[in-house]
Image (cartoon, rainbow, N blue to C red):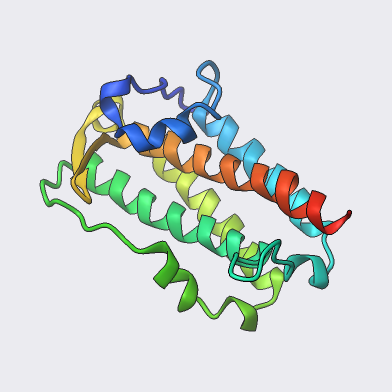
Length: 179
């Protein structure tokens, strides 16, 4: 059975996360939306050639493959934060520098099949994590990089962050490369 996880209130996530929260449907199931996002991303990425996956719309911008690895990194980190908060860990968790993660990801040496296998495995793990948390655990707050959030807000952040980057791939990368 799929758990219903209510959309968090504004005091459950930092202001910077609002841009991601706006992309998520407030009604409906977080779990179902995570599943739909997984399917949508796989469908989009699997249609692209290797040349398209390596496309950068500007010289110093990430390739589409690097964007997908960034989504994976962010989901893994925010999933860990959600677990920590749900378990009432009072440690102020550190931030991370996304540019350093990208620089050291060795994405260009990986196949898209390998990247998408990681993406799908991680997303299924994220779904399992959130589906297994109690309502009480989902509402627990924690601190990461100086920002307070609830475990459930981090689930919605994961989804909104994914939607944000897929929208950029569709509206910026794909439109620019097909001009």
